[in-house]
Image 1 (cartoon, rainbow, N blue to C red):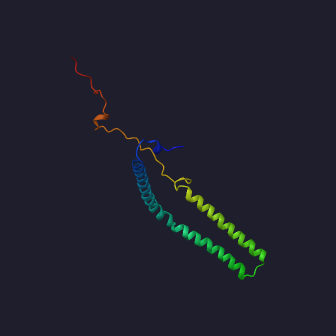
Image 2: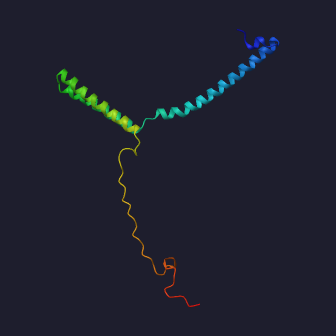
Image 3: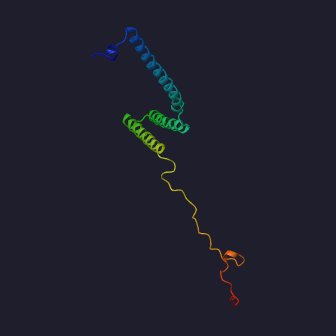
Length: 147
């Protein structure tokens, strides 16, 4: 299968020049894409590196629970089977805590619990004021003069 450049009726120098220009355009596009990619990576990196303070505290607490259970089981010289059961129970508690924490992170704060709202009462009906021109009857109370 022959390429387009071989069928083109031009000299070898012209074909080489066109190929070089095409290659340079492709390289320029690749360079431009690389700059955009670097800019996007620089925006994403800070977001990925900073864990929330609550997450760090929660993980530290979970690690402390696991270490405390292991220390108590070791110092108390419990039987190996009891130590394994205690560590499995502590690990299960940590896993459940992580599952609950991951679910609450995905649920928006406004979802789930209804907030107490004050009851909206209708305002009392206003009594018409006699001095208000809009509330007066449209006909005068006396009969009009005879024509």
